[in-house]
Image: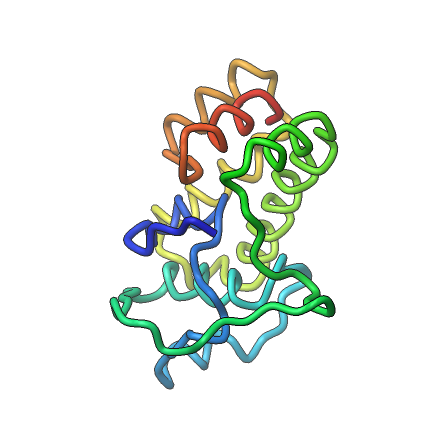
Length: 165
């Protein structure tokens, strides 16, 4: 995934996940927020991290806690995103990139629906403004992304993000 585990601020997690779910640990207090099922979440690990960033602090351990293996039956699995062929294929088939961006708005909306009254004002405003991005013209989309600092990890991902948002 080429993750930067220090990128765990609420605004950053609206657009991109950095958590591998099978390595996550959380406390009882966070579990209370996870009882309710969202209308939409992209992946369970992303939802967990987004909720954690909304209501608490996220940390990480700098040592491997599992041996990760892949096989032909993996439903998602890691991809070699650094290969030029992978990047070109994604760019040419831009519908995948657009879809990956669009579903983040649905997930943010689910967060608002579940936790509107519990979110602090700042995070609630960030999520609400983020959900408005698809309704804006291109220039206002870029301005809002910059204002909210909802950037992805890596230059090529951000270039694609700004092109296809």
